[in-house]
Image 1: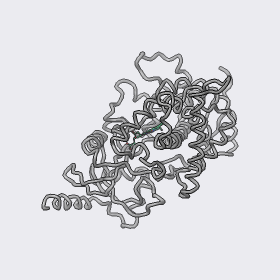
Image 2: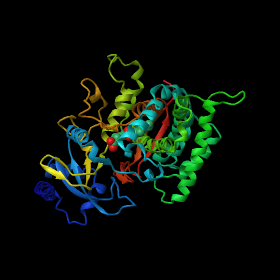
Image 3: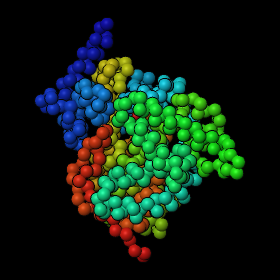
Image 4: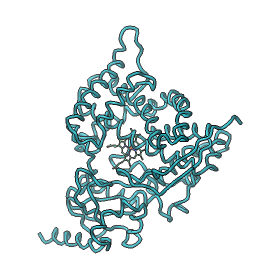
Amino acid sequence: MAGPQHFRARAWTASRFVVPDPVWLTPFGYLCNPYFIQQQADRYGRTFKLNQFGTGAGPDPRQRLWQPVVCVMGMERAQNILREHDARLLPTIAPFNRFVPKGYLRYMQHQDHARYRKILQEAIKPAVIDANMPLIEQHLKSKLPGLASAVNEHRLAPEDALKELAFAWFILLFFGLAPGDARMQLMRHLYAGIDVASDNDTEVEEALNELGATVLELAQTYLDPGPGGTQPGPSVVGEIVLADSEALRDINTLRNLIYMAQASWIDFSGLLGWLFKTVCEEPAWAARLRQEAVSALPPDAAPLSLRFVQEVLRLHQSEYLYRTVLADISFDGFTIPTGWLLRFCTRENHRDPAIFDQPDAFNPDRFLDPAPTRKEYSPFGASRIACLGVHLTHRLATCFLLAVTENFDCSVVRDGPLEFRRWHWKPSSKFHARMVKRTAG
Ligand code: HEM
């Protein structure tokens, strides 16, 4: 076994790249300093090793053990490794995966993944999102004054107020339940019961069963609206059962749908928080957004609202991809041993000055011609398990942006340093904003 031994020895030589902090501090660096990973790369090169807590990006409450993790800089390198070693890499598993017999989509065996991805991809289609946009716009406009009061009176952190707002949109898009529907409260209660941080399995199972029964009832209204009833508007669940009326009898489809709505709502709410903060920090860009309708752009250029969202995604909402190494893999002269983690450093790639001029500056016009390629900019992933929610994210985010800037002047009242909460960098909890209603004209 001279070969593998040799490679293993080479892998361990990677330890010479371990940051020379006192060892007990090492696992915290990436949780305390948003520039930590870049600083290590500046010091040790484009492939380096460090230690961290748990198997995901944040300290995992279920697994407090130290994990060796190899950080890989460069988007194209990441994409090559993901493609070449797909069969040996598994995304780090979210705890809720244990409630889905065949696993949550991205963790499934490859054959299952292909089958279930197709079902879900066909249901999350742009036409479903687009058909719901008028209702979402109307809901947003009706809620903006309340949002402004909550924000101005500091009754709610902007992040929490926005999460609440987005919940109604995700329940509408996924399950066809209109924002004013009395069952919305029940959905809120049941989704609270399957909170991703809960470790009371019995309670989660109960909430999941009740949620499943509610989703099946909603799905049934697409197949049989009842006497005098009308079919609800297009939704993901509607598309699934209209394509195959038996599809939700499979607990894997049902629970994937339930968890997908939750996981994507949480990701999207994080984006809303950053969009709102950026609107407060960038009044000149907000003013430009109001002019969007009259600006003369070449017909194939992305509108400013989309470029604004792309820039916020670049700066704030695309941090990393993680993979667990299932069998030794070799690249760059190293072998990464089984059981180690790989971290593909999207945040740092998206701030590479060789690709993005003045990378820390907010400039949506960098997405005008020539826009960055997929090998340079990739907030939604670029592997077999790339995101299914790109259109959804872009539509909801641009809608939010235009409604807020058209109706309010927003500014920062107070701020503090970024904070690492759960798995991501978030605006400071000291961040307070002010929203002033704009008068016509
Ligand atoms: C802020 C918005 C979002 C961002 C930045 C984002 C980003 C990503 C990324 C980077 C991946 C790949 C993960 C990996 O390779 O490890 C991914 C996968 C995925 N995303 Fe999103 N996402 C967002 C919103 C959504 C939404 C709204 C949906 C709703 C449909 C969604 C559904 C999915 C699914 C289903 C996958 C896994 C696909 C598979 O396993 O085949 N995402 N997303």
